[in-house]
Length: 348
Image 1 (cartoon, rainbow, N blue to C red):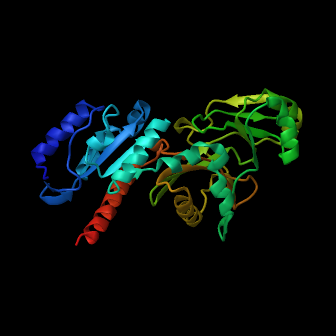
Image 2: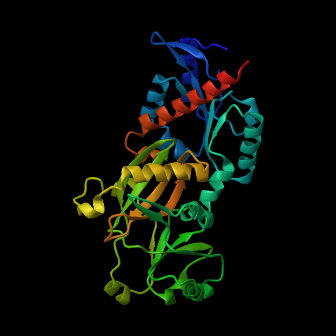
Image 3: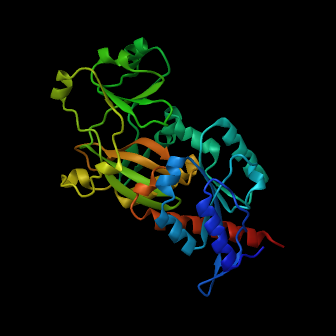
């Protein structure tokens, strides 16, 4: 099937006015566009309304159209196999039913790239398994080491937390996070008597002083973008000895707390070495089986090259990432071209 320029304009208009509907469209086809031959890449998306608003911004959609990429809403009331055809399916929905739909679709449509495999996503939604690949990697090279803070999973019974912490040898203060990583809320517990105030299931992590700055390492395929964000301030031994209780934080890092332009100590503000991040990202892409994620990374205060990954987020808020429109559209194009080449070489 070929699409003319006029047909594409009508197709685009319908998609803009009916965001929740799905349209029939060609897979990668030839399209005459600005006197050049372009491949059309059709991306079916199934996202929450919040993610649509933050990610599918007008600038992204405009740039995508100029590059021959068209976003089409997947209608969740219709069978997925009856829609499209798509080159790429982009999703961030929860629920076992949706996961099964995607797994079945991947089996019956191997020519479509699903971003990302549901099974791989589930591993980073669970904080018990989320950082396991980082820990197993035991990363170390000439530019530094990357590990994870010592942590402990508490599934129930708050009254047993204090004993479990002592047995595991964790040092206070402790960061408490929900076991299911769909909430950005966290708490900081200063003393053992307050631990029973926490609400399992949760993960406890040793708090590592890091100068109050964390690095958000955005990964989009092979592309990496790093930004600084303000984080929890350091806790001195004196403060620890004088503080009691549990302090709750609804969200530590956000776009409003950018530290990129702040007047910081250069030792704290210095970004992790690019070579270290590239190697780390390559290893984690392979181990996690994901294309779209970010790392919350910190440098231990007082060191130059000792880093920790404290969280991994699937399909994070890319709208907060500088130049995300160019990075993401280039990624989609490269993904489609790679798939198209493989398909072409496999033809008799």
